[in-house]
Length: 132
Image (cartoon, rainbow, N blue to C red):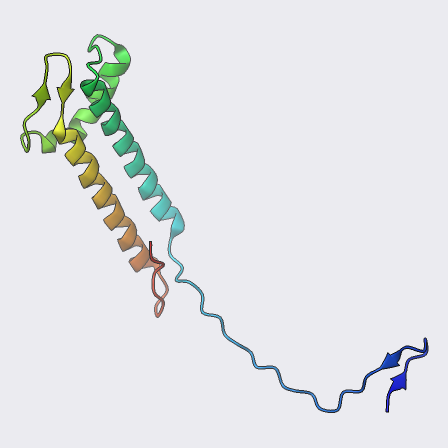
């Protein structure tokens, strides 16, 4: 039997209420995103500086330019540990510097490793760090 509301709208009766089961949703592992972003930014700046050095040398940029000297002087300490692994090649003006390419790869791998360590170290216990 259906009941009606005061406005003459039929209202259905509910005979048995079914309990609602609460479902726990597993959250992704939280980690210190800001620290990982800072590391990524620093590695990005370092890699861009070294890539700029590589391109300037490859294209034979003039060493008399203050900008070129700035890029060379800032990036030299970053590339110096990798000089001598492979010989430089090219003509007198255009130099192919493989040490710069090795440096870019090594710093990118180091940055990736540091970000993974940040994710592992700052994730709550019992959770898995987010994969990338």
